[in-house]
Image (tube, rainbow, N blue to C red; front, side, top):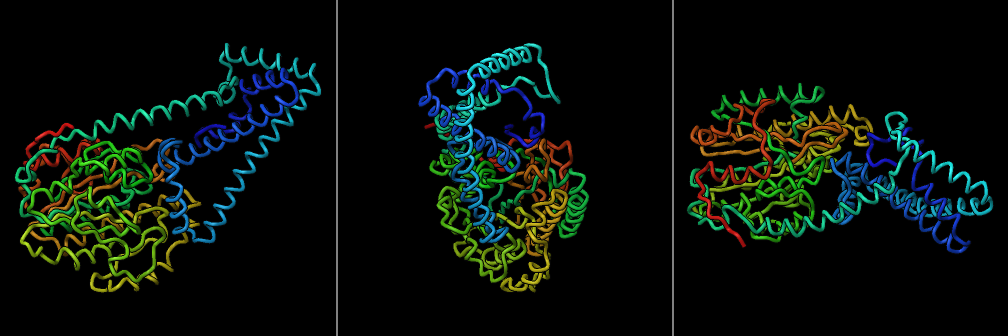
Length: 522
């Protein structure tokens, strides 16, 4: 069985497997009891490899990478929660139960099948021996001549190669954990005194915002781009009319299709946080986050608005946030929109009422971190913009939610998924920029970006990991400080605008706004 959807073709199943030839020879040579035990164990191992191949397929489609045997088991809880929010509890429980039964049956039936085949070989030793020898000669001949069927080698050692690949990935994971721990101890600004951090932004109303799944495909894909691009251009003009101007570029995300927290922490830490172990390492470290840099100045109060957080969030300490508003602290009484707990427009209005409209009592400036969620898959139903003075407690969104698409219909249709994804990005960008147009001040500086590309079914199997990033401000001096970045004027980055690794943003931003490096090396 192949380990990617792209290779899932009939030709993959008509090849001659070397492992079957060797297995037949071994079973022929063994007495009955050892043969039965070896056959049963072989069936179990074959089932395990089948499950791992299926997981590689799923992770490739959703996260743009293979399944990590050591780190990724914890993600199944998140996957179940996502399905429950999108399809309902009953459907999710049925799907999980069906999957568990299917996996158990796979292990049992494959073990029994190999035992049965072993017994068939034993009952016909002469024929089986000749057949095994012939199959071995054919395999060697096909391998030597490089014979193929539909572009795939006729002689296959796929299972042995897959086992070797899994072992190599496990070694890499274990080695990466130790090496990354050393990297995380080094920080170019780790010992920088507070009065030497971001002096170019003192007195500013600083806002960092992540838009869920806002990737390069939204701006360049032929299905999504027309609507998204026109929205970006229209919002650029509207902001300019209100006195705001923007520069935009590209960042290459450390994640793809999901695991948004890896994109958030990569941007804020300046480290390449590409897996769960790296994330845990960073969260447990004293490596300075970009948001914490503002707190360390002593000149900013720091606050987070996290409508996607629905449980304890100990990461608040590492991010250096004095106060965090989660999904249950924003007064929302309306319906969920699949996974998203509330529409972005509502979350932004609550940010305005609870945070932005109130100056800190200690006379400090404010740095805010917002995570917008309306563009989270499955992109159905999608909220619509309403009058800002009509938001209330959000209960008015019930009619919009009921009139929206059924998540099950969108999930099952690739074209509709792409269309609805594009609409969700238009909604999130519109909500954010209308908020800025309506409530932004002369001192407001907004940095907004995507955390990762959407899943491969939407962005394509060979899409980049790039996401758009923009800096918006009224004060021309703010944008003047990043002129040498070569970014595009406006909210829509040009195709050939500079592309940086997401982990490069923190240090470039700190440097541009006057921070003095004082390296820390533990």
